[in-house]
Image (cartoon, rainbow, N blue to C red; front, side, top):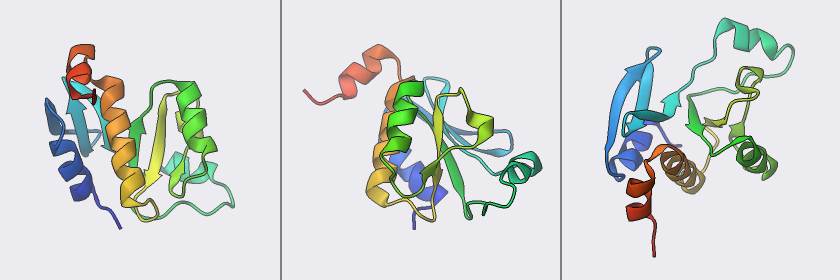
Length: 128
């Protein structure tokens, strides 16, 4: 099962990244823009689940390119990927670290980095 320390190790492989704290949780930045962050559920979030089970374990939020990409990611049905009403209309998905595979987590973190990296930096990172 991946952890936030695993996320930090993945992020360390990307240029111009930094780890900080935002909203009392670990947040990873590229060129000053957040692309992945811890996202515990607030009381309001839990209440919105109603009678549905609340995803357990640590939750990571990752940026996606746009709402179309968000829909595509969620449409793939990969275990551990989901959203909540608080994220409606916002280009990010949630990842349940207790469920997601290491490969899918690495892909999501890399994709999130690309969404926030400056064009020149992203161009240098992309394979030819």
